[in-house]
Amino acid sequence: MAEMSYKTPFGGEIPVAMRHLLLPPEDPEVEERARRLRELGIEDKVVPELDDFSRELAQRTGGCYAGVNFFIDENRQFFAGLYSAAADTTVNLDSPLLEDPVPGRVMPRDFDMGFCPHVVRRRKALVLEDVRDYPRFAGNHVVDAIGIYSYLGAPLIDSTGMVLGTICAVNQDPHRWGQQGLETIKSMAADLVERIEQRGHGL
Image (cartoon, rainbow, N blue to C red; front, side, top):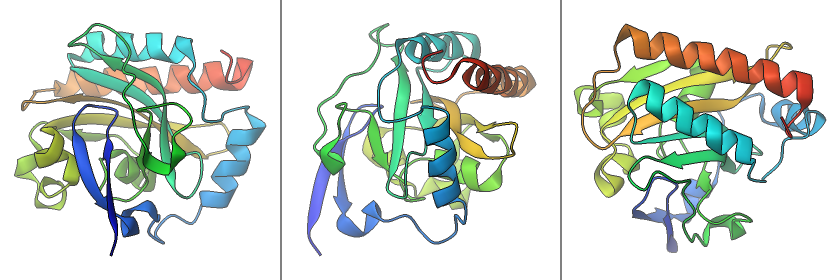
């Protein structure tokens, strides 16, 4: 099967079999979620306020990267907000994947491409201080290919009960997020959903 490679939102490049461009059948809310995102005015566009939000998330949790990740359709995770602590700037990497309208902001929605799809499916926060301690997650492509070894994520659940996406912080080394980190990301997720519903994607 033909393969391609892409540069990820968190740096590094991964060869991806074309099968990874397809969402597994475990998510029954794909169409309803896409419709709700359109209602809220959320699409594949960068929102500077969400980049600022990602910066704050990284600083408050100690993550080297952080992002606001919407699940736009059946194929894509889109980072409308993204931050890299290494450069103290937002991330903007070239990416040919899925004709990415904003370079470096798209990942496939396959469960082998990062941990946010698991957060959406679980509908609750996920804390991985060292992903290698968890067989279910240790083989994820982002571990060896990019060097992502710790993850902290929470779902963005709106007032209708729909999971719009996630916010997340990651590190390239094992990291003790602790109870404070968990409480911080859950609180920030709730605050962001409220802002989105009150003012729309323009925030």
